[in-house]
Image (tube, rainbow, N blue to C red; front, side, top):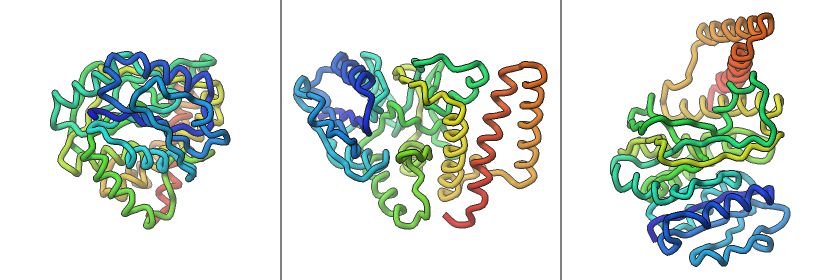
Length: 312
């Protein structure tokens, strides 16, 4: 088996998951070369009773009762058989050449342990202009050319939506996560209403680099990220920026990285600049300034919470 697709899903929207599966069914890569694992992460209704996967010769349902993206991902990794693993969220519609391109990239770039691509949004409701600065926090990403790096401080660490990685990286990642799970005072993966992120993607990239690989991003891996209306509400956007900023700072710190770390003086300077952007945006009616200022304040709230943790 060359490749495994892992879908982690918790109480999915029927119309979204239908499109995700239809896109997988339409892949250029023959189904004999890849397997499909649908991981039901403690959904109220068992997905195995609802979704028929018999159209795929190597498809399986898995049930993970521990709620959280991390638990679902680990279940998928343990059950998978492919040399290359692809993580697909239940709102990710892959381009028809996604899986074929994933294999080609891994074959052409033996030094890369994990790839991410271009994730374009499809909004249920178009967001207001001032919200556009928040969109990168929703796993929306545009790549113009291939970018590769093994520099821990500068590498383009992976985005979970559509992430592609090697079996060797997966094994070392599982060992790392298992070893630190009991030591961490807080879990930093997405679970329920908590919007933390990083353990299930950013940290995998860090482990890949520490294992001797590079991280890469490419325009060749294309997917459409379906965005329901609640994910562009002001409350949701403020929370996700705060929670992601918080969790990433703590992850970087545990790995001994300077990425994102701020001194108190720099924290105050950034806060002052953000407040100035908000004021200018409101006075001048400039949506871009207002949005950038609000994103900055939300991020600083998360960073401030992280700085208050003396131990992790």
